[in-house]
Image 1 (cartoon, rainbow, N blue to C red):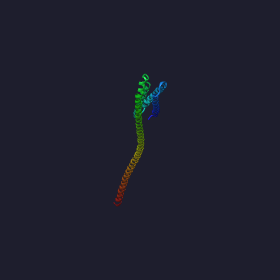
Image 2: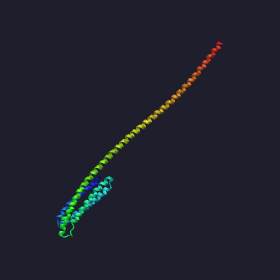
Image 3: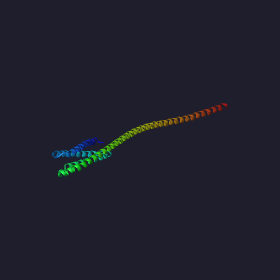
Image 4: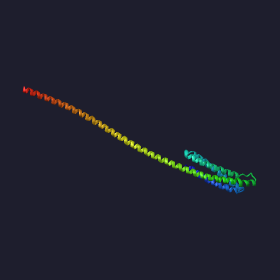
Length: 220
């Protein structure tokens, strides 16, 4: 997960918790103190909206699998922010008379705070699930990297084996060339021996004929 997004997320959670406490405190205030508290909450809402925009921009620049997880988490934060805005509007609604305002504070604000509490509980559960999903994505990515490293190692081994086979092939090719040369030398030697045999046979034949002729003329 993006460290930048996590930084924005921590800031937003701190601001959201602080705004929730201020809204709860503003319910029991009157007059200028209440207006001041509402002004502080509205300023905090602007900061929270700015962080929401930054988280949205950061999430959309990440990889698709991480992007989907972060955008789902961001939707929960936006819903939480809308609830805070609703609370502020109800607290700051000053055109009602005292009775209506008391009724609003007793009924509407109670329901809003309960809904906000439920929303935060769901938000925490969703955040936990998303964190688990992020951990699984990290584990899958780590497994993928380990598999990729193993594949690279296997390819390197195969390349080395290929080089060894090529070297052996070249060596065998050299041996074949030497064997071919040896065969040619042996063939030439064999031809010379055969030629020498014929020459020797011819010489012997001539000598035999000469001896026979000599004996013939002597005995005649």
